[in-house]
Image (cartoon, rainbow, N blue to C red; front, side):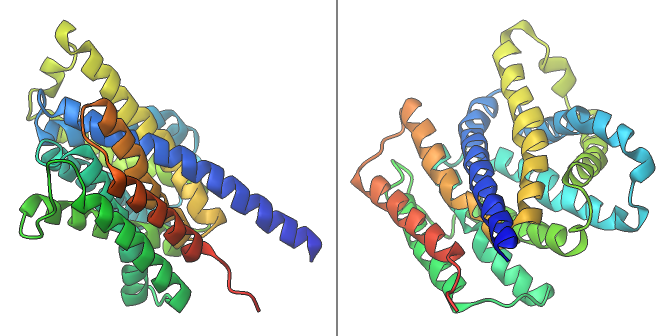
Length: 299
């Protein structure tokens, strides 16, 4: 019993370490997207980063080709589409329309949709504790939104609704991985799902000017941003996120999206975005929400 408890505690600690790393990596993505969209289209940005991610994980996919779980091909493809390719294009579209702190904060609605999608389609039970934690965290997110520099939230704004549609996809993906792919190694999930959609992304890029622009001398810094977004932000992070899903739960793993606004807002400060008291208040409330969301009910 003690051994099991220690194993659980070790997994929880490791989960938190990986969540903090993922929050840092993903939080930086919004400011990098903002830098790239002034030179590349949303389609080039989204497909480009996923193509690079697929390319980065291709060696692992080839290495595990003999272990490819054929019955899991459909869930792997849907995971790639809903968890990576389509949202990447969506965030490319909103990159020049919303500031990075606001986009990062809207992304924090993901745990809500993890619970909703799990309850609607995967027979997941939603506890009162989870609902309370989600509400608290979302209140903190709203504070960040309402104090988000010069941009205020407008639910009639199609770009904010686009971000919400991406978080719905993230919610579906988390449940797909947790329900259909729990027995598959994280590196296999990430490598094959990203290689699948990486091929699709490559075909998309052939109809754009991506390869003509990416290697221009004046775009060398943007190439570095692309490599970060693809190889680390989408590639390595995908492996780590799927691992967190397996050792914890979809709700715990998706709570990383409550930390992302803190990193995104911090990055925004260095880029000239303003931050005030309500930003700090919102971040504090978000952390309380995460604590409540993942707190185990005592028997």
